[in-house]
Each structure stands twice: as C-alpha cells, then as structure tokens.
Image 1 (cartoon, rainbow, N blue to C red):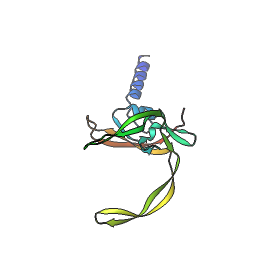
Image 2 (tube, rainbow, N blue to C red):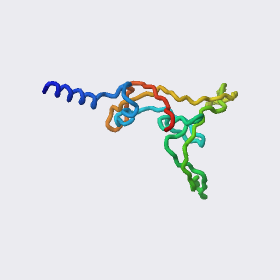
Image 3 (cartoon, one colour):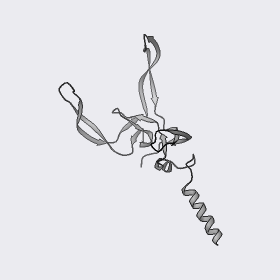
Image 4 (cartoon, helix red, strand yellow):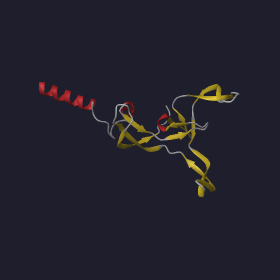
Length: 160
C-alpha cells in the first residue's frame, strides 16, 4: 500500500512539473511565465494589430474576444511640439475581415539607396485561422534571451 501511495505521489509530481511540450494545452503554455510564445498578429479594421490568440471566429469575421477601447475623436495640440491626442473613446469589439481586397507591390526598382515600387497589383487577401506558432523558453532571468523549444498548431476558435 505504501508503495502504491509513493507511486501515485511521484506520478502526480511528474505531471505538475512536466516540461512544456507540443502536447501541452495552449492554456498551460500561455500561463507558463518561462515561455515566450510568438503568436502572429492580424490588423484590425481601424488600424491597430492584435495577436491572433486574442481573436475568435464570429460568422464571416474575426473579432476580439473582449471589447477594446477605440478612439473616436482626436485633437491636435498647438505649438512647436504639437501632438495628436485622443479626446473621445468608445468600447467595441475589434474586427478583422476574413477577406480583404488590397494592393501589393510586385516589382521594385533600385533608386539610389532605396528600393522603389514600380508596379502594383490588386489581390484578395484571405486571413488564415490556423497557424504554426513557435514557442521559446527564456534562458535568462531577465527574459532577454530565449531558445526555440518547439512549434505547435494554433487554431482560432469560434466565439462563445
């Protein structure tokens, strides 16, 4: 009986302190402060980007899982060091279109020290919902350096 209890205790301890792996759940990996997870980003309709782990599928669009604060009115300060300030905000879901018509450069020309686009094309961009995400483990206490330990598939889930 004592041997069985010891075996169970060792098994539970091994599960609690198991090294992160491709078989770990995303919630376990995200909660692990010793990991640096390189989630891709998506651009929302109003400009800012967000990690794909903060998005969910809502019909034909992707939206943020939680409402975000969006600036609706700006004011420019006068003077030598003028700046643009947000003076009114609203709370709403951030939206990422699943399909977008856009333009991209298809031909460049060297212009002195710069590359200049000389030919553009219109195309339809389809926002992916499945990604190969690299997971790194920090190697220093200050989180300055990390080593890649594995890659894992991440799928954007449907909104609740």
